[in-house]
Every structure is written in structure tokens, then in C-alpha cells.
Length: 240
Image 1 (spheres, rainbow, N blue to C red):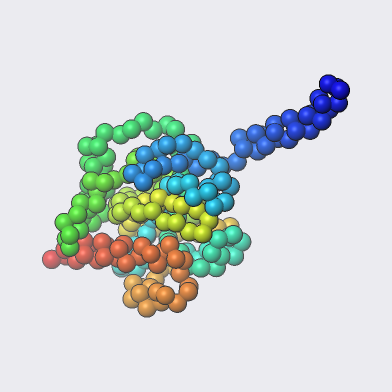
Image 2 (cartoon, rainbow, N blue to C red):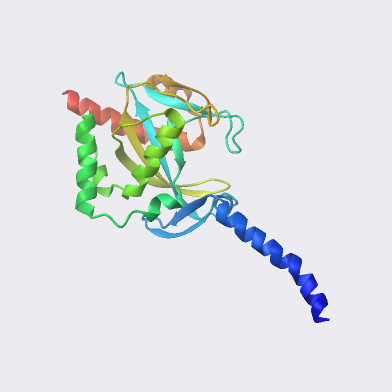
């Protein structure tokens, strides 16, 4: 009888070992609370299966010197929102990107953000509200993820991101803590043909005229007005 039980258990043990192997091979996301503090990790599949585990993502809005904004059109092979126009750069943070960073002193984080803003000639202070966006700058591992995504998707290197704001976004499948940045970049771009079907710079008036017409992702439409408000008011202030 014992032998039969062991024979019955063996496939289960093998299946469990196989599942553990797959888990170890699958991409891991960091889990955070609403303040952005790391609290754990989970697989991509689990995060995107309706578990609504909060995980961080990064968005980068890429402007050129003429004041146009680059948008990417999502590949038709995407399982979520294929063929829709979206943020210049966007992606998840890998758990491994958080491992090598300890908690950063708040003063050094603030100094880094203000330095980034100064190098771009874009203030980190909203003239409308006086809110200093830079003082709530996120952890340094978010910049690592942002630089990786920008390089992978558009071939962007050596750029200075300015942190704009952070917000939580819940879709039908997942729960994201979105960290939104912008930059001004005039070097040639090289789109990833696997992730992106096409991309181009848009006039801001063209973007505003097409909001609500079903061509942009809901996430993009949810944040673009705040991004443009920040960008336009800060650049206009500097021009006076």
C-alpha cells in the first residue's frame, strides 16, 4: 500500500517541481504599497491575472525641441490594447532592478531630480499650484527601469528624465503604480519592431483633437492632460 501511495504521489511531486522551475524562470515584478515602498514580489502572470497586486511601472513622454510629443503605436501582437497609440515609452520594473539599490537619502534624490530639471531647462515646480513635483521623486531603481525601457523601445540613451507625478491605475486585469516622467530628446529614434508597429511625433493640438476617439490607450488619455499642463506651463514660464 505504501508503495502505491508513493507511486500516486510521484507525479504530483514532479508537477510541483516543474511549477517551481517555471516560477523561477518567469519574469518577476516587485510589489509596492501606494507610497511606492517595496513589500514583495510576484510573477508577471500573477500580476496580470486579476490578482490586483500593486506593482510599479514607468512612463516616459518624449518631447522634441519643437514641442511635439512622440507616440508609439502598440504592436498588433500585444495581448492588451493592440494597435492603439500610447505613451512614448512604458514598461514594468523588473524585480532584479530593485535588488541592487538600498534606500536612498531623500536629499540626494531631490538634488538629482532638480539637477535633471535644470539640465533640461524645465522647472520641477508647477507655476499653477506651486507643487514641487521633484521633492516626491521616486526610488533610484525606477530610473534604472526607465533607462532600460527607453533604450529597448526607442533606442534612447543619455537623456535626463524629469519626474512629473505618480498615480495608481486599475484596469480589468492589473493594478499599477505609474511613475510618469518627461524628457526633451532630439537625437534619432529607433523603434523596436516587436513592441511597436509604428511611431511618430505629434503636434500637441493634434493629440488634444483626437482624445476620446478610441485611438489612444485609456492609460495615456488618463495622464496626458496633466503631463501637457506641466510641460507647457513650465516651458512658458522659462520663456518669459
